[in-house]
Amino acid sequence: MKERLALDIDLWRNKSSEQIARELTSAFVEQGEASLEKQITFTLISPDEFRSLGLIWETKIDWAENAACFKIRHWMDEQSDDFLLWISPPSGDYYLGCSFDIYQWVTLANGEKKLGIWSITERYSPEDCVVIANQIQSVILGQEENFKDPELLRRSVTRFCPQNGQTWVDFLKRFFGSSEIWQAIENGEVKRLNTEIQKESEEVIDDTMYERILQAQAREEQIWLGAQIERMMEIRTGRSFRPVGLCGGSNQMFLRQTEGIQTMISQKIITKVEIKNGQRVYKCPICGVDVKAGKKCPISGCDWRAPQ
Image (cartoon, rainbow, N blue to C red; front, side, top):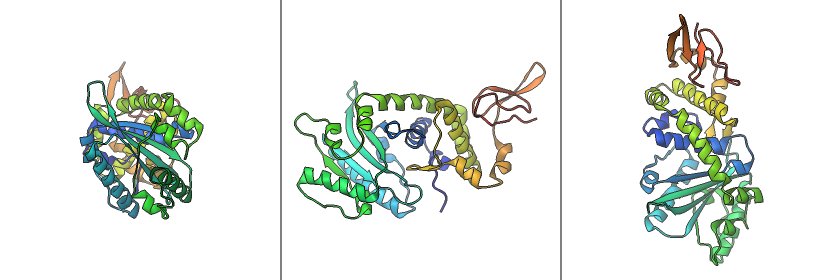
């Protein structure tokens, strides 16, 4: 079984540049080094696109999450006005935190309905997640201890409908999350941050990068390209990409742990070269700035060096 990477180029090769940019934004918000209220993602996606998302069937966790996904699709088919909550507890080396995902229908100004997904990262234990889920179930259904096994919770979803003029935030903040998390959602900070990082993602996944993604067939080349994209986003956003997180591992971390990969494929990196004033000048593939032959990229934090 191949390594689970947060930015998996192989899974991007059959997607549009718009889909890739959106997934890059979600991964970088969720797995960026920041306080929890700055790791909340908000995504708007069309129902058809959500239904077409490819599912991975490699681990027991994949199977459990896919079971929850089918229940989300069933809820979508009903076009109900209520909300959906999915809790994914921590598990193993790559699921160090837990995720609370809230699904809602959003009607745009033109009347189009899209699926709005809020993903809140927390640091609760699997047992904490079970307690929270049971508390919510108790309020909604009058049932207690409906869940006992965290893995049963992973494959389940909970429908809820706030009453008496409450918002979904009013309803859920009684059960989990800090005041900073809920404040960031209510005051628009979460949407603002996601919009800012989405803009950077779209600039990184330009036509040239998209073509490189489509052409990257060897696994080693895909990992190297994923590491480049991570570094580009780090420089642009000022946020470090954590080695492991809910989305998977970092390509940069995997490169550092796997000697020889960088040397093997460094010659395959596509760089633009021009002749200026009689000298070769390369475009840094990470930052896009001019770099003279044999020189290091002048952008602080970038380690790329132009060929001699």
